[in-house]
Length: 145
Image (cartoon, rainbow, N blue to C red; front, side, top):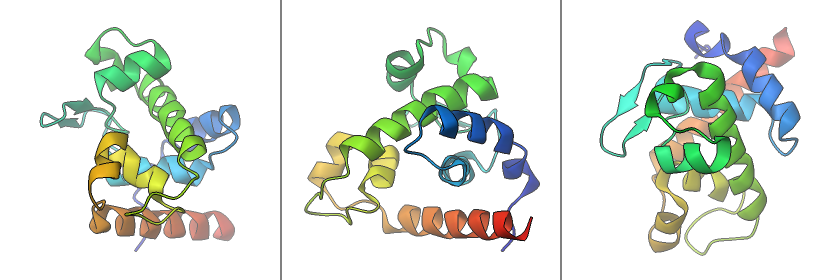
């Protein structure tokens, strides 16, 4: 598997926000982008609803980036700013073990499922497996560069 260019094109922004949120690695941000939108800044999931690269919902966008209009989430920088701030929050606060998930990936599961849902049920193992696979591929690509 190789990392799609549609994902790697966001590396500079991933690096910027990983520097801002030092608990994150740029590859973790990119792995979420890959898992959530395949790198499409115009992606929409009407089921949540969530928008853009990191599939950010409006409550998260408001709380973590002061976003006031969902159209702002189609801007890659705004989307990554909000998504990475939330991801860093989850990684920091979910370092403790949840009974139904691996403590190493609880924060990733909470990003996908929502923190309240993580407590209620086992997270989607396919999402976790895709994230881990994407992260591994992104890191190996970085080693080749």
